[in-house]
Length: 439
Image (cartoon, rainbow, N blue to C red):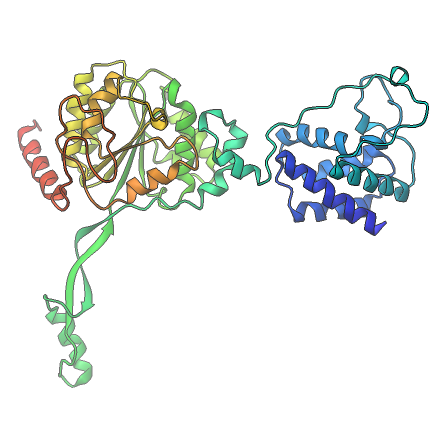
């Protein structure tokens, strides 16, 4: 019985993995332990043991039933009731006989053999049975690995939650910047006399080692503006979940916009992604509404950007560029934002196509002021986003009129990189803008 049980668990687990369920050795071991404890005498009882130990969600039950019917369909005798699946019939058998038959069925299924038909049986005399359920998405790896290559717009809420574990492995790193604070370090051009003399008291007043001070470095602020209009709803949910799960994303300042600007940072400080997404939807009254990119950017620049939230920061704008407002407003506000922010990264899922061109009014107006444009339409495509965020060089420059080249991490359309001059230019322009603006 032990040999048969091990073979049943191993071959059944392999068939489930082939169908796309994340059934590893741990689940197979739990299935074998459940069978040993429950000692099922019917195929129905064996199916319930598999249901209790091999699936982790409602969406996986259909695949389990289909695989169970294909692997152990030989165990069922005649239908117990009209329309009942063959795998759920309940003939009376001893546990040893049931497991022996299950092991034989598993071997036949793994070898691609068909169960033996009794002599003299005619196809016309067979009882009518339901057609076998087709198993979709056959994949040799984990189901999460398969979902990682799927577009966020094609994922259900349950599948998106399954990717939370992979999102926690992602680090949203941003470049460092010089701080006004000083830190102590051995050696250097600026000697900290107070710390040096304080240490010299331990050696009789002789300063054997000089202690210097240098400017400290801290990570730049990450500011995210997420479009939550109807066309961006699937990607907005994925990006908000990424900011909640990824390392470094919890420190980001997050805003949503459609027809108005809403600050989502307090809602994203909850302990669970589901609750954070629910709070984010409740905090944004225009969820799934229209899109006014220009008006939202103006509100951000007036209320938050001028006060220093975007000064020297990495600004990420998540939108497909469809705007119902005036493109000139988008162009003007993007120019204001580019004078303050260190880098502007635009996340547009439509750019996943190699033939994409910024023909929408809002995207065409914002294109020259972006340092990088990435798609980030799936979990595997997030590598471009993380690389754009970690780029320490500010690559913004004046673009040629009518240029449609994609801004990237190496060069801007129609211009060259100007490393090292971004902060000085941004802060001087902000001071000039603050003096000219009314109080």
